[in-house]
Length: 388
Image (cartoon, rainbow, N blue to C red; front, side, top):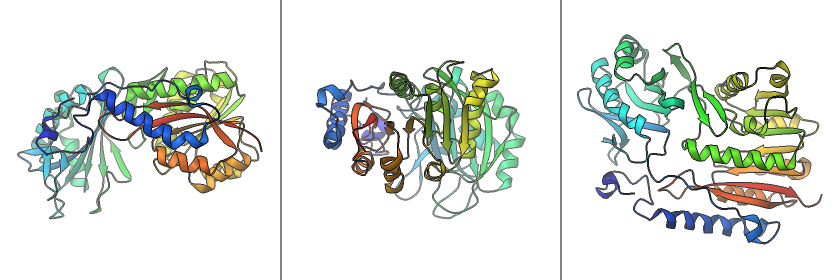
C-alpha cells in the first residue's frame, strides 16, 4: 500500500511500507521457518501450512492515538522526535469506522476544553485517545487524562459526543496522573450504560472491557482461533487450559458447542480480561453445566501451573512478546501434557522457549500475519511430546 505519511517522513511505524505484500509475507515465512527448523517433528513440507494473509490496509481494529497540538487544533497520532504531536487522522492501516470518528473526536476535544498534554513541558490534561472497533461498527472510546478535571469535562460534554459519534457504544475516562511514558493508568471511569464492547471474532462473540487486551486485527485473529480450535478438536482432549487467555478467544473456541462436555480453564492476570471472558461465556452458553465446565481464573500463568497437581490434557499458551520464559517453559517440559498449542507474536522468544522444552517438537505450524506493513508476525504451532 501507499502512505503519504511514510513518504513525507512523518511516520515510520510501518517499517515495511512500500514493500509488496507478497514479498512481506514470503520474508516472514522464511524467517520463521529458519528459527523453528531445529524443532520440527518431521520434514518442513509436512509441518508448515499455508500462511494466513491479511488485507493490506484498514485492518487495525484498535487505534492508540497520542494527543498533541492545542485545544483549538489538536493532533491525533504520534509524537515526533521533539515530542510534538503529528496528526495521523487518515492512517491507512486503521479501520475505516475508527478513522471516520476521528474528526468528531478532535472537535470534541476542542468543545470540552481538553488541553493536550505536552511531554516536554509536563503540563496539560489529555494524553491519549484509544479507540476499539467492535461488532456491527460499534466503538469503544477511551480518553486518557491526567486529572479528575478531565474526567468531569468529558462527562459534561458526553451527550454531544454521543450525538457526534453515534457508534460510540462504550465511553470511558482513564486517569494517568504520573508523568511517564505509559499508555494508560489503573483507574477507569465508564460513562456509558454499556461497559463492554461486543467483538465478533472467528466463531465467537467476545466482550471487551476497557482494560482488557484484544487482538488488533480482528479478521486474522478469527482465523487464528479457528485453526487452534481445529487442532484441539483433532486431538480431542477432555480438558484444556488456556494460559494468558486474555478475553477468552482461544478458550471459548476450544470449548466447542454447547453440551460438548470438554472442561476448559482460562488463566489471565488481568481481572478486566477475566471479567470480559466470563461475560462472553455467559452470553454464549445458557446452560448451567456448560458455564460450570468453562472457568476463568485471574492469576499469573506460572503460579497457577505450579499449584496444579496435574495439568489438563492439552495446554494452549499465548504469551506476550517476552514469551513463556525459562520457568514456565521448564515446567511444561517436566510436567506438561502430550500436546501444547503455542501461539506466539515473537518467533525469537518462541524459538528460545522451544529450546527449553526439548521433549516437544513442532508437528504443525502456520504463519499468521496479524501485522502487515511491519516485521512483526504471529505464528501458531502444534507441539507434540516425543518422549519423557
